[in-house]
Image (cartoon, rainbow, N blue to C red; front, side, top):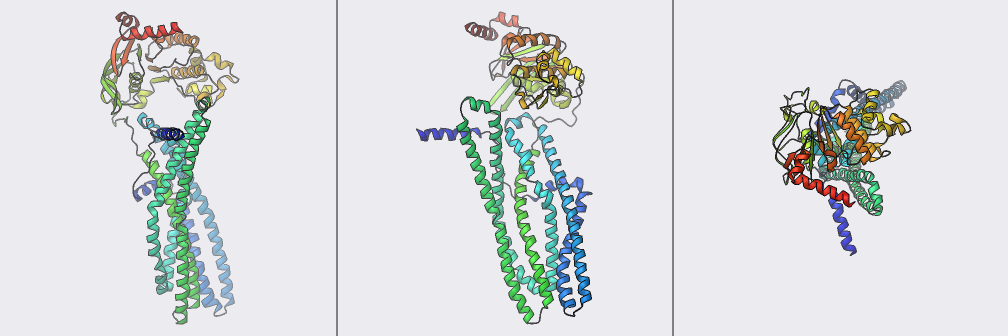
Length: 609
C-alpha cells in the first residue's frame, strides 16, 4: 500500500513538470554564439572598453618588465659589477613601475565593472522586451517561474563574464604571449623542454569540456524547476493550506532542492578538477626548470641572471594558465546560460506583424468571421469553420458549455492567435494586415480572473490609459460603481495594493478591471466571464452602468450566467467549436432549442437552491 502511494506521488510529481520545456540543449560549444554574446559590448566599444584595455596593457607590461630588470639588469649588471648607483635607480624605477601598475589596475577594475553592469542591464532589458512581444502560445507552454529564471538567474550568471572574465581573458592571453616570447628569447631549448607539458594538459582538459558544460546546463534546468515550483507554491499557498498539503508540498520541494543540490555539486566537482591539473603541470614544469636549467648553467650555456629571470617568468606562466582554466569553466557556465537566453531571443511570435502592416484608425467595430478554423494543437480543433457577423454597436453574447470555443473567438478578435484557416476582419480589414498596437489599443478585455498590479488603486485603473487625468480615473470608477468602496479605503485612490490585490475582494478587483477597461475608451469591449465573481447586487449596478457605457461600442459578452445576457442584441450558442443557433433571447427561447435548454436547466437549478 505504501509503495503504491509512493508511486502515485512520484507520478503526480512527474506530471507537474510534464508541461516544462526546460531541457538540456545538446549543441557543441558554439563560438559564433559567444561572438553574438560579445556583440552587446559594441555600444561601449568607444568608451569603457578601450580604457579598460589600455589599463590592462599597462599593468601587464609592468609585470613582464620587472623580472627582466631583476634578472638581466640587477643581477647580471648591477650586482655583478657592484654598481650601487644603477641598483639604486633600478629599485626606484621598479617602484615607479609598480605604482603605474596599481593605477592601471584601479582604472581597469572600475571601467570593467561599469562595462559589465551596462551589458547585463542591456541584455536583461532586451530579453524582457522580446518576451513581452511573444505570442500567447509561448506562455501556454511555459511556467512563469521558468521564464523568470531565464531573465534573472541566467543573465546574472553572465555578470562575472562581463565584469571580469573578458578583460582577464585578454590580459592572460597577452601575458602568455609575452611570457612565451621572453622565454624563447632567453633560452629556446629550456623553453621548448618545459612546453612539452602543454599538449598533455590541453588533451586532458579537452576531455573534461563536454562533461563540465553538460553539468552546468543541468544546474540551470534544476534551478528553473525549483523556481517554477516556488512561484506556483507561493501563488497557491491558500489552496495548499486549505487542503492541508503543506507536508506533501514540502516533500516535493525537498526533492527539487535535492536535485538542484546534487546537480551543482556534480558540476562544481567536475569544474574543480581543472585547477589541480594545472598545478600538477606546474610541478612538472618546475622539475624540468631546475634540472635542465642547472645542466645548462653547469655547461656554461646559461648565465645565473638569465636563469633567475627565467625562473621568475616561468612562475608567472602557470598563473594565467590556471586563470584561463577557471575562465574556461566560467565560459562553460556562461555558454550554458547564454544558450538558454538565446533560445528565448530566437523564439519568434506565432502572431507576426507584416512588414507592410498598416495602422487601423477610426475603428467602427464591425467584426466578421469568415469560415474560421482554429486549433491550439493538432489533436483538438477548437473552432470548425465558424462564420459570424457582429455589427457596430451591437452587444453580442457567446454561450455554451466549457470548451465550446467562446474564449477562442475573443482571443482571435484581439489577435492573440491567428486562425488556422479562414479570416477574421474588423471593418473589412484582415487582422493579419494591420498593426497589432493599433488593433489592441482599441480593444479592452475584462477577464474573470482579473490581475491587479502592485501600486495604488489610481495607478491600476490608469493602466488602461496612462495619460488619463485623476478626474478621468475617478469618473470611470464612479460609472462602474467602484468609487463607493474605494472611498472607504484608508487612503482612497492612493491606497497601495500588493500583487493580485489580495486586500480586495474578488468583486472589488473585478470592479477595478471594469474601470480600467472603460477608461481606455475602447471601440470593442470583451467581457469574458467578467461578472462571475460579482454578487447579484453589484452585478445589477454594473448592468446599469454597462447599459450606458456600451452604447456606440461593440461588446462581446461571454457568460455562463445566462441572466446577464438577456438584453444582448444577438446570442450565439456554441458547442464543440460550432455554432448551433443564433438570435436574440426571445427568438432563441421561442425555438425551444439548445439555448432554451440551457436557460431552463439554470432556472431549475436556482429553484432547487
